[in-house]
Image (tube, rainbow, N blue to C red; front, side, top):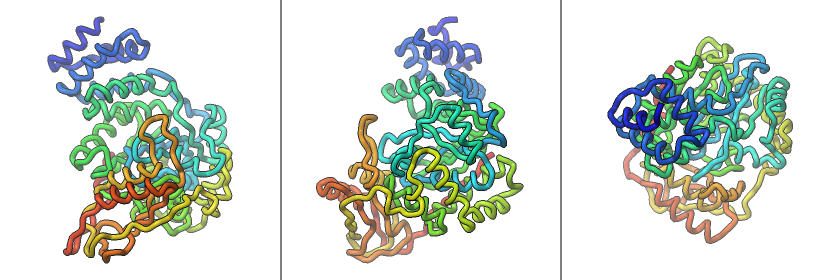
Length: 434
């Protein structure tokens, strides 16, 4: 088998076989197939696309290119959750304790953020002392003991995806549905869960700006998961404005804690209940959405979800006192309001611009080497459809540098549009696919 023939076959629009796809993935991961040939194949795939069968085979080959985490020693049905990412997306911080408190084992691998937002691990490190450096044995033992553990992704998890994504990033071949879906799902399959729930974002703060693209990606990933024998559910949700009100690592942790205490934003709670219901049904703990939502709400009302979060933080070396006293979380030295420039209804928020404003304060990474300031960010006071008067605060900015705060404020204000007329609020949950 020759790589030249595989490139030419895909260039001509033909379907690659399972054996050809395996040959490419194994050869590229080992270094036998060079970047220039892999680049040529990626460009051929970008233009000629892949069939559903090819996409499923590519995903499985990438998943099996390194370690496949074996979670069989954890009792119960393991359900993983993945979000395609957005602004203010702190869902895992509140959702996983709620689900674990309902008896679904949460064994999750998460990453750090690159770009305008911190990742789940960055946010969790707002708890002083918190560590995700667990061995596989510690990880499994902790899930069996308290029902929840989150660790950083291992270097050997889907290594083919890491190599291919880095290559696609510099060869203008990122934006292909099959390649995006296989990149996400290869890591989820390698992580060993029995079932997978996906939160696919759409809107100005999401990777998939158009709802039709988000629906297509969700459908593709559900098909891949099903083909691999995993029950897979996708929720397509709105990211045309930040989720909740807090944007920034420690600020988002506080909002997640407020939610588990029954004082969280309505949209954030709704998303947690929707995703959590899918996880409970996939894990066999509920027959339908209504029953699942009742179980999840009970964990908030009786305090068991908040207690589970504290157990989880303590088990991974963090200061669990911060769960009950958020004043112990990192705090910025400057807190100032960002005033509305005019009267009117908020008609639009360019969501990713809000994320960039937080990044400018130090709340995200511009490069892999960047150090995140966990204390900075923004807490919005109003969102799309709300009426504001000129001079009223649109948000409270948390900063540690006056110059950065001034530059971030300009960027933040450019994200907002206003209208004299009443504005209809967008629907949070667009569709659920299974």
